[in-house]
Image (cartoon, rainbow, N blue to C red; front, side):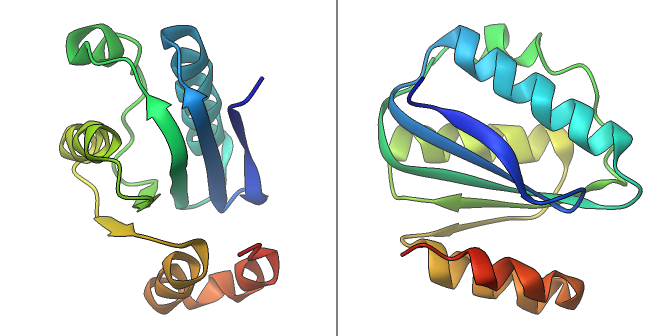
Length: 132
C-alpha cells in the first residue's frame, strides 16, 4: 500500500503519508488509526499529513465525514499538512473545522516539524525523525 499512517512519536504525533491515489478505504483506515490513537493516548496528539506525493483523494466530504466518529477536541492538537496540493489542503481545512483545531501548511517536512516543536516543546524528539 502506498499510503501509511503510523506514530512518528508514540502517543504524541501521528504521521499520515499519502501517496499517489488515496482511496476511500485507505482514508477510512487512516481515520480509524487516528481516532484510536487520539482516544487511547494519555494526552494531546498532533497529526502530520504528508501529501507531497498525493495525486488524488476522495472528494465526497459527506462520505468522509460519516466515518469520523470520535471528535475529542481537547485531545487533538495541531494538524500539520506537508505539501501544497490544493485538493488535500481543502480536505484538511474541512477536517480542522470539524475538529476545531489548529492547522498549518508547509512545503517540506523539516520546517513543519520545527514549527510543531515551537508549539509544543515536549516534542523535541520528533526532530530526530526528519527525512528531508
